[in-house]
Structure formats: C-alpha cells, structure tokens
Length: 396
Image (cartoon, rainbow, N blue to C red; front, side, top):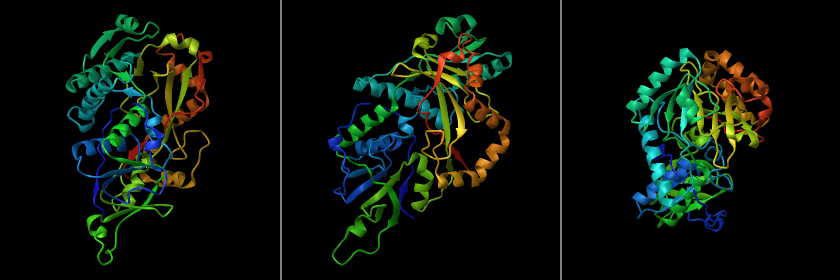
C-alpha cells in the first residue's frame, strides 16, 4: 500500500496568484519529498501548513484544472461559521470554532476583505423553540463567541424585515470569498518554496519498480504519481485532497473508497438588487434533525448580492453545476451505491419536496416568506449558475 497521509479538515483563507508562478507544462520537478494532490482550499491549506512546518522538505501541489480552487472552494455560500451546530467535543465542533478564530486572524493579518455580518437562526413555529433552545445550549458548550437568545423584538432590531418568535443571534458569524482565500494560501505556499502544477490529473499512483543499477530514485522516492498524459512525479509521501474525487483518489492509492462521495447540487435563488435592503446578515431556519440538510436560508455575499436557498437535489455529475450536466460514470456510481439508496428511502418525501421546489420556485419562495413576509415571487431570480454540489459522504 502506498504511504499516504489523511487530509486535515483545515478551513481558513485571499489574494491572487500570479499566473506566471504556476507551472502548466511537463517541465516540472520530477522528484520531491511530499506531493499534494488537489488544488482546492483543503489541499492548498494543507500544503501551506506542511511547508511552513517543514521548510527543509521539497513540496509540489498537483491540480487537474487550469486554475486553482474552481470547484467546491469557489462554489459555496461563503459563510464563516462559528460552530453552533456540531456535537460538543467532536472534531467538527473543535475545528469550526478554532477555524473561525484562525480565519479572522489570518484575514486581519493579510488585510483581506470580509464582513462580520452575523447570523440569526430563527424559530417561526412554536414547536421549533425547544430545538432552538437545545441549539443554544450546544453553542454554549462549543464556546461560540457572543451567542445570545433574542425575542421577536430583538429579531426586528437585527433584521427589520424578518419575523419570528425567537432566534439565536451569532454576531461572530461572517462572510468571505473562500476562493480568494484559497489563492492566498497558494501564494503563501509558493513564497515558501512550494511548486504548483496545474492541468495535471492524477490517474495512477504506485510504488515504483526496482531502480536501474546506479540510480537511487526508486529507493529515495518510491511513489510514482502519473497523469493521463504520461507525465510522472515521484515522491516520498503523497497527500490526497481531491474533494469531489477524494474517494477515487483513495482507491487508486491502494486505500478504501469509503466513505463514498455522492453529489447534491445546491440550487439558489437571488434577490433582485432593488430588494437587497430586505436582508442585512445571514438568516437561517432552525434545523430539523430528521433531515440531512440545514434548509433554505438567506445569505449575503461579498459582491453585494443575496442568495436564497439552497434547494438540494441529486446531481448527475460530480462537477455538475447546471441542471442538465451529466456524466454516465458518476450517475451510475451514485445510483448503484447502497448508501444513497438508504438515504433516499429514509427521506423520500423530503427529497420529492426538494425536487418540486427546484422546479417551481414559487414553492421555495413560500418557505422563505415565513421569515421575510414582504418577499414575493417578483423579488427573486434563478441563479444563472447554480451553487456547488453539496457533497454527501456516505458509508454503505
């Protein structure tokens, strides 16, 4: 089995990478100590952290696209979450809370733009109040900064057009452009001596055969990463951070493909510019633990737009951002996977509702109107490019 390292769930932080510093040809260093496969935010953050901790080692980052962070890292709602939802003491809770603090510190240090616009989690029905209070207790145990419970009057003070019975107010929640953050990581990595190679799709990883007489590369750099064009990079260690393809990369490296990736596309609406005044910060529903998604919400963006959604529907392609994007292998892999079959059967009514709201946006607007009654169908538009695949990781 190839010597691999598990990718750490690191999430933090913008700038642009000059194109002249990115290799797009076969003229790359053929050997290195550590190769990182995947140029999204996890791969870039991991490569940056590793090279800063181990400056004497040589590093290379391999990305299959022409540019960095063009998939999930560049297709997301852009929220800096504060760590409310996760089980106290869990790895997710610790990473989210610490990650938010590190993100703000990094952004301030670099002078990068963000907005700490806050978030309300709003109960609009009385039966949601016990779940809201339980969520508040969870947030307290997770040491979420400045988290408070507010009443209907407090909601109107924070969000004049929002209506609800009670809400959690999380002023520490913010927004940022995570793709720009990813590019900042790339710049840090390169300035520390790392090499970034794009248009290099890892298609095979293997232990190299015995070296010819007098050549010690096979001993010193025993792992070969090959792409579909016949290029080869040799290294001592490989760290795969493939996002939507992480299960397949795990498999070709000799490890288990589980948990499996099943893509769900997030379809968003947007507020028309003349209606942006309706929303100041993030407005979220109280999550229902019976369902696997958070529900539709209001999300302001760094470019000034306001997203409404997402409506989560099964995507027919792992990198399928449009309704009719289709890949036969991805489609068959998803439908034949027992974990997805169990998810569908356990959430059939919910799934049909998501599909209906994806087609008839008036149904989605009716849900959003529970929070902002003034909202109407004439105030929203479909996004021309839907949001990212909301990646499900399932065991069979």
